[in-house]
Image 1 (cartoon, rainbow, N blue to C red):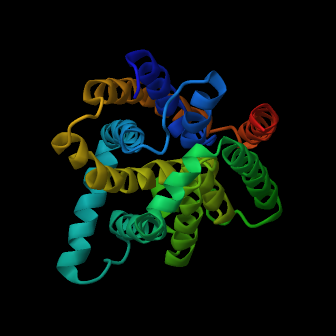
Image 2: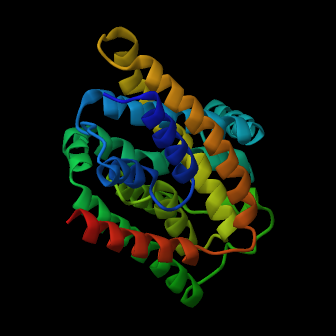
Length: 284
């Protein structure tokens, strides 16, 4: 099972790293192996623990961007009422961009859930994915410098998001699906996709944080009812870890929304490459 101390450490780790582009899932899977903790990472309770800590992060994101979500929800219902996206309605367009970008990871997660869960018990493979995440972040930065920045300097953050094409939103959603592999970061993948689509770091981060919310809530809706109705799970430890994750996530989002105003993904790319290599050598 899992102790309160382990829930504290893993919850704090997940909350801090979920929004950083360094793969919270990869770190949460690797740490028990590095510390020699006898936690069965393929067990149902561990998957529920991960979902619960992710849900706490989603709730923090929902609260942090609450004003944005109210505008997006109103825009969505305006578009439904009119049967189309009204011309110049930025938030209605953002709503549909988020819906389209959510589809790839949602479908793949439903179809291949068990196969992805089996990867939790292969730390050497997770370490390789973490290295791959580093290459992804660095590659996106290099390609962005050589490519077009048509949207990067366009008006406000929300106006630049509203200029995204639906095809580019789908591409960002496909990038997000990489995060189903433990070691690849959801934030990192969507940030990379946003940069390659022409967004600035700040705009890409905003879209990434907004995009994370519905997919995490969807995963929680599927898994957490089992925690409520089933017996034998360490319910209190899971809830404790979720609370810790929520606190840590708030610290993360406050920091990162300021960080990406003037900084890049390169430090995170270097960290993922070095950490993944060291962990691979250690566990292999």
